[in-house]
Image (cartoon, rainbow, N blue to C red; front, side, top):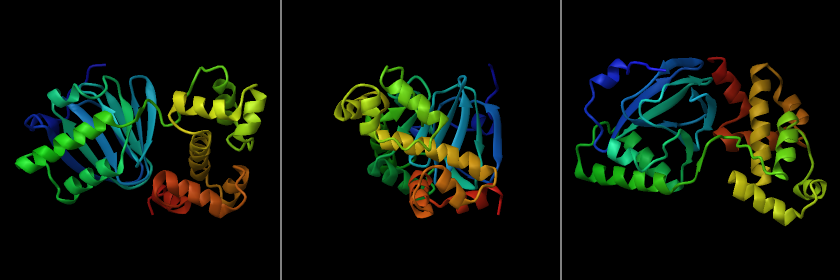
Length: 261
């Protein structure tokens, strides 16, 4: 797919080494397919950013940045109002980042560096100290953990049946020990496989699966208490705590923002 660059991009000088652009996005904002002349890091302050690119769909909560290499067509959608920061990366620095789109985890230091740029509304790098800060930010992003998907998959013979079952039924309550017995291994071995293959624990992966199902049910108008019960949470407060950990606010606030209230 060959697409023209955005008109706003054509007026910019190449990032040196970064360029920041800030946008407030209203609930249910949709950006049609487009591309950029430079690599782009996407950062949001809350909620979820949904992207379509390279034949795949990426969903990223606010704890992650989304890296998109230069010239790669992509579309974006947000269900709730949020602040979006687009960070263009110079060609030289982009070579240090992955050749494919991915999610990059934000460490506390990465988050602090980004928040400082955003607070000061830095756009063009014109100050020597800002350049150094930008280089430090890139260095930490290069070393940060990255994922191809928010809910990654695996063909591992022991993980695959577990992941498939939970994708179909996120409310499944079996513990890691029970799953280990089911796939004929030990709990410790299975825990190591989750970390090695997926980069997260069994509980973290299951919570993400439940979170994505909760988003769909919230969109359909289900009450929070009913969602909590159907996802096997003992109390609505336990479900709300999980939801808040994923996106930084409560399910009801997500629903209100999704409805544009």
